[in-house]
Each structure stands twice: as structure tokens, then as C-alpha cells.
Length: 118
Image (cartoon, rainbow, N blue to C red; front, side, top):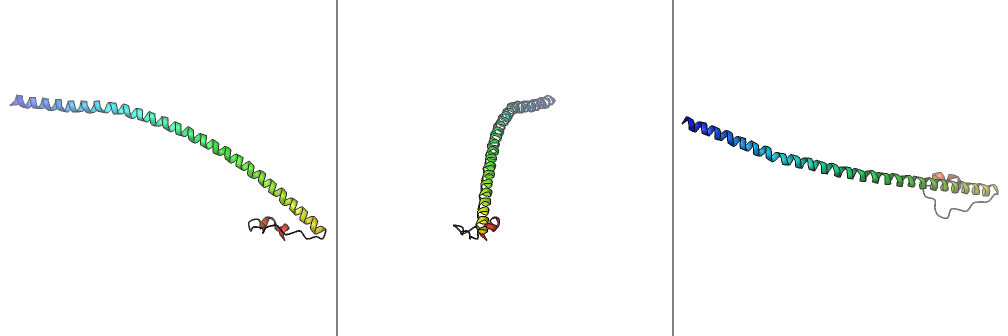
């Protein structure tokens, strides 16, 4: 009976050892797979980051061009408003009444052209 119990104990230890070996053996390929997945994900993130940087640079360039265009348009509008003011001033100095604007002046523009339209 003692021999049967010791044989049973040896069989149990062997079974536990076999299960432990199978678990450890099974985990190693997954660990490698996880490392490969991590490498793949890092590569994808680097590519995505490069694309985002490129897109940001393009947006900055477009923004710079837009600011330059708006600055030029602002200068042109200021020049035309100044020219219109000088013409209105000249006409009033000559005792003439300047013609009304061809279209009604929008409310957003009226504060900037107060000396022309009044």
C-alpha cells in the first residue's frame, strides 16, 4: 500500500511538472508573438507620426499663405478706403455732394466707413 501511495505521489508530481512545462512552453511563443506585435505596432505608430508631421507642415504652410493673402487684401482695402475718403473730402471741399454708394453699406462695414457715408 505504501508503494502504491508513493507511486501515486510520483505520478501526481510528474503530472504537475508536465502541466507546468506545457504552460511554460506555450507561453514562450506567445511572448515572442507579443514582441513581434509590439514591433509592428511601434512601426505603424512611427509611420502615422510621420504622416501627422507632414500634414501639420502642410497646414502650417497653407496657414502662412492664407495670412499673407489676408494681409495683402487688408492693405488693398485700407488703400481703397483711404482713396475714397480723400475723394469725398475733395468733393466736399469743392462744395459738391459725393454720390451715394452703389449698394447699401452693410452694418459690419459701416463703422469703418463712417466719414464716407455720412
